[in-house]
Length: 184
Image (cartoon, rainbow, N blue to C red; front, side, top):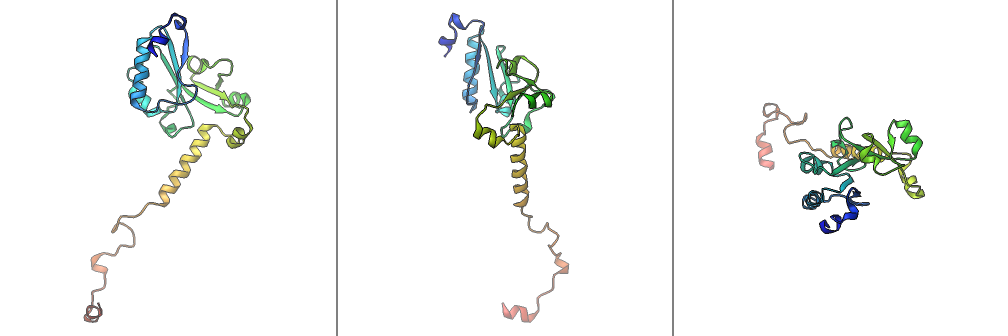
């Protein structure tokens, strides 16, 4: 990869890491960082849902030629800071992007990493995908999923024995009688 991306034809170019997929583990992410450091004349960029991994591995000391945008719609959405992080979300159409006050990257994918911090991506016109979106952005859809999971977790919580309101104190329990002892 380093040999390929060090070729003169890539000097001054932007390379998107992943058209589909993500930085699935730490060694893979760090391997990409080694490629980026070895190819300083190329600018790399990526969308990622791996928020915690990036905040831990990339943000403290990012390669100088690496730009990224956090993409809503993943299990780590709660760790995205909209006041600080560069964010992308998919919208049903460009009108919805404008109505939300976000900027569209429709003119160029590079606007996601070079333009304003909040970037809307118009949804692909794929009928079954649009039907599943049901007018929601991935951030909204993921928030619904997270809320449902939280409700289910609360329903399945169990009280620790002796901590609930029904736990009688030892003084309030009836004392066994001789008849109780003989019945046992």
